[in-house]
Length: 301
Ligand SMILES: [Zn+2]
Ligand SMILES: [Zn+2]
Image (cartoon, rainbow, N blue to C red; front, top):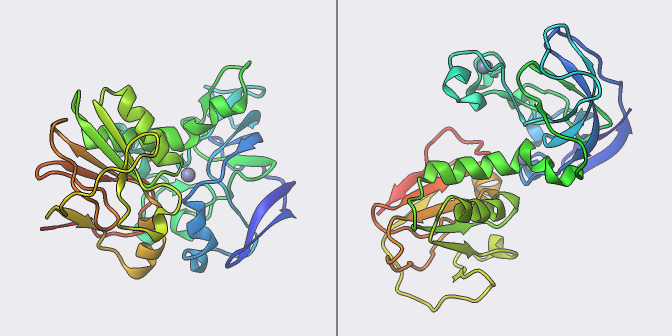
């Protein structure tokens, strides 16, 4: 089959690779019909190169048609249309039983101190061939794939693989109260989806901050929806910074969206200094997405 392969730093190519085959009774083989490119894939293009091997197949946001299933896969069958979430999770271990699928104990890469295996995402996450390919072997397919209806274009479902649940979790963990204010810095797919979900879940105001060019403009002023800049305000004392190693700062911390939630819709927004959005004292700052860093975000006075 043909697949997108990593060959070296800033070097990816479509190449011929072996067709995947069933290896375990919980596997499925899916013919991929759509496969998105994630902001997290930029880490593979650059800083996570040391954890890749030439010819590794990339991609963790696919969907397609089931071709084959193992004996223990019963909720999907050949011919079904499925979306494949990027986490590879068993659905029944201690972590999975508590909804912490990204920490699945069955697929986690213990020697790397990481959580669940991911498709197409380095030796840190299991070296599992990814979904930017014509076919994909799906481990733990008795649990992972989501069956979706026929009749609508792939784009209607593809975001279920990563963008929608990641943004949904970010907003839920930020615990937006009805009528509250959400500020989102980092307007890639996750950030943009988070603004929509914030609205959907009842936020009174949603502020999009930065946007194109924000990576080089960490002090960018907040923008209201529609792009109008807010008037400059006095810099607030509360900010947060990601306390990660330099590679994480260069990679993940730059491309992951931040959400700040102010509990009161009347609380005045503070001017952003640094990458995280401003939050009032007592507000919530949520870092969404892949963080190749073990240390928590450090809140600074
Ligand atoms: Zn992704
Ligand atoms: Zn599990």
